[in-house]
Length: 409
Image 1 (cartoon, rainbow, N blue to C red):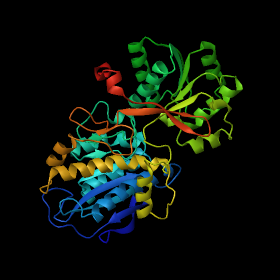
Image 2: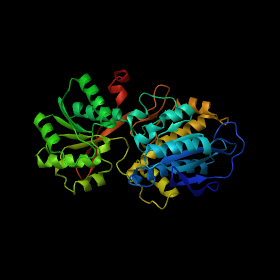
Image 3: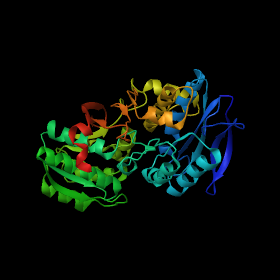
Image 4: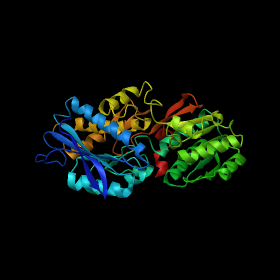
């Protein structure tokens, strides 16, 4: 990667890392020369949410580096610029404008937080620049679909809750479910899919309790769900409130009740278990939705991808599971660049990306884009976690095969 050098650049008043190269030759397609294709990458690389950005960014860069080592794409190397958006809409907006107006990139791959990616959706469509979310997965970023924004590598709430509800009904025999979740955009999207599947399958939602993201006491909502006595408890909470709920489940003696968490409730099994102070009592009948082919980067399916990351970034010998989410859209970009041919233009790239359909080897279901869809992953699996081992329980379940997409129109 001799064409790349590291520097520090200020965006929106903050110092951030950037990957730069020498002056580009004259070009007819923005971000494309005879020798290279320029991609802008952004993610949280500092602050409290660094864990959500560092490894996914490294995964994408490792994939691009590997492509370059193998000769590039039709004689061109992929050059990338990396910026730190700190998961804020303001920083994401400043970086996107810099990529478009100053760096003049061909496409963007970025965003680990839904708010940041959704905030630039209007801009990328106005400027007609393809933007692929790195590992953000908010429904609002891809529903309704817009031409130039692509996302949801880990799957949206439609994918997550379709899997959760299908397993609850088909494998656990649920006739009633109780839900605990936030009242934000993600929680609302999750609840809508829960109701969509419930209506189709004749299942009753007997409780819907609000658990704010900043909750410190979940006694009342858990007691209300206990009083409703659902066959299965569904959690759409983020990781911290999920921990609070699970501790209350133990306290109130609900450990025999099946509990299924959405993907956002279990960032990793190690972190989840640690948050429970190592107490596995509440995990007797605990399940969660999962979009990957493995649970850790050392699992057989994911180990080759870990090895690729470590090869290119040896300073991180143990990348976290979040890193896996950085691969699919980097792969999709490469697939489309190759399919577009030597005479690369944005128009040819867009034609190619809308024919995307491949098995990444990372995700539990195919990565797909077409003219009617911008959510690349529509399927997830359900796994069972008892505090020691993770076992595949069901799936993959594809949400658009479970609920007709017209339900959401």
